[in-house]
Length: 78
Image 1 (cartoon, rainbow, N blue to C red):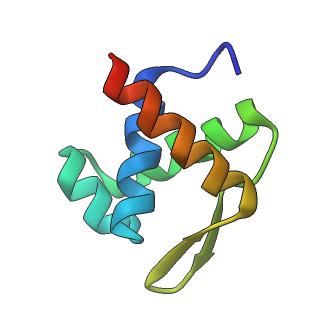
Image 2 (cartoon, rainbow, N blue to C red):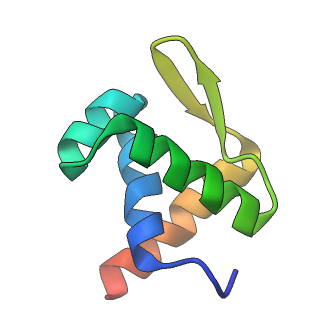
């Protein structure tokens, strides 16, 4: 996971907390398509699907739950 940036973790945390890409993008002051691309890139980098996407809702996969806990700890330390 060496190529993962703090910025990507912040994006992931926002989506996980908001459970919605549009609201997370608004919170991050970015567009929803850009956020979606960033999350897909993060999933490629970690080699796992992190989110379960359904219309109007986003949930976490088991890997997503693990990453969320680790991401929150890393972002707080920075």
